[in-house]
Length: 144
Image: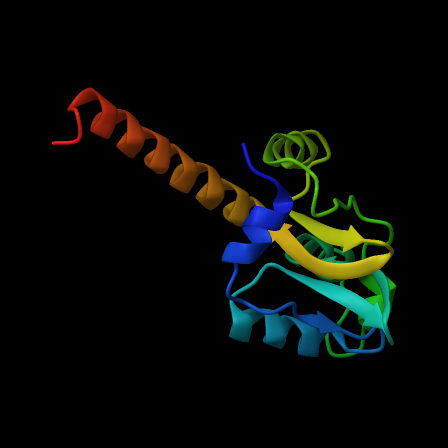
């Protein structure tokens, strides 16, 4: 099975991030426009956390706060579960399942290089299985 680097190579969406001083409303607008469920939070070149739809629901809506008056730094998840480009797909599945997360920032040598979602992982696994099945069918039929 593959590694995170293989998933990142297939992604076409660039890494999308906001600063900690962005309003939650602006962050949500960006998430809507890009059709994504999480944003990386960067302060200059430093990764400081991640904001997800779950953070918004639990830390803004349920607390009766206004998304226009709340800053991302007030609700972001600091120290989220991270992986490297060498992490296996199996390890990602285990982390996502057991740590109850849908997004994993990818960090190599203390530098953020991307993010993988549960959707990215599932797509990779399905594509890999289709490839294997195709090869097996080709082998069984003798290449006909």
